[in-house]
Image (cartoon, rainbow, N blue to C red; front, side):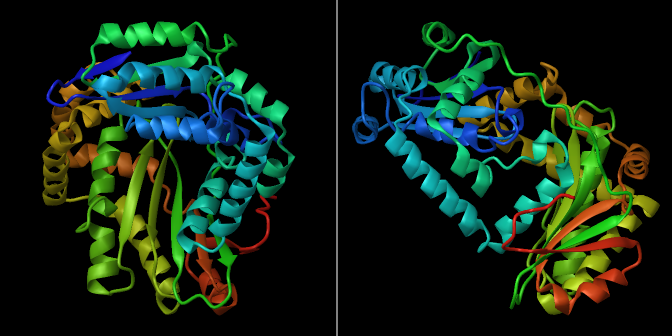
Length: 426
């Protein structure tokens, strides 16, 4: 349990994290965790969907269920005066789901519509297909909301099986902040745990790197595009790797701020894209280095080629001492804002637990950032970045630029994927 007390305002926020999500679903049942999670607040054995929603609204409270690839989160907030009624409602949702067929049918229709609508949003489409391509064939590639085929096939019985698999106290992490103490949270958790399914905890997700061995470009072909969306990257180290902090500093120099190299070269100097950013994604047992920009069709080939060159230059020539000092200052000065409210501090403490970080992570964060040297950063960049081993996904009008893409140095494979067809990993 994690508790961050704050008596300045009579309100409480709670989060329950269950170590189960899209990546732990059975093959062919993609999206079942998402449907089961959403339906927890759409009716119970005691109340219909409208009755449940009205009760929550009357209390001035909120209750949401969010399903990710590895974790399912139950997020709620309420005024202190209503905490007992709110906890009763949250327990009811978690321990007495009804999964009414009529509500399942409505949610399936809504989810299928959202999957279809994603094709109309170029950014969402590019990001979705990029992470599928990056993580394939690992279970982490499974889409959280499933596919049109899998969602259509999910039954009410599948929901009960997903519920039994996911919502077990054997892998639950509870957190609260605000006008609450540890004893109160423990009492509520003990009460909840006794009524939750007592099934075995899901096994952890193993992610194995499967980089293409070349620069693989997947053109998501969509007619009459004036602008493109480009995501590119590769698998990288996890948050426990000794080179993680040096890499994080290198990423900050490359594309972690509005004034970093990517933004300066692509946005400021050439005006090719309003934004250009990079990210070092750190998980418990894997990571990824990703960067992205969104130039006009007429600038897409040049912007992609420049992005690849900047990535190669980062590896070949590293960062300067001045760049590293600026990046360290940025991360150190940003750090207090991550802890400025009780809710933010709770989230940081949750992150430490969920990722298995050291208990003194927050206390040592600044010193670890400040201890990184140009030498350690440049060694990490040379060791772990792979500028010639990348997955690139671009939403564009393919026939206008495909041949030019093939001529970019280092590009070894170009695939064209119609935007309105089911993704094929073969």
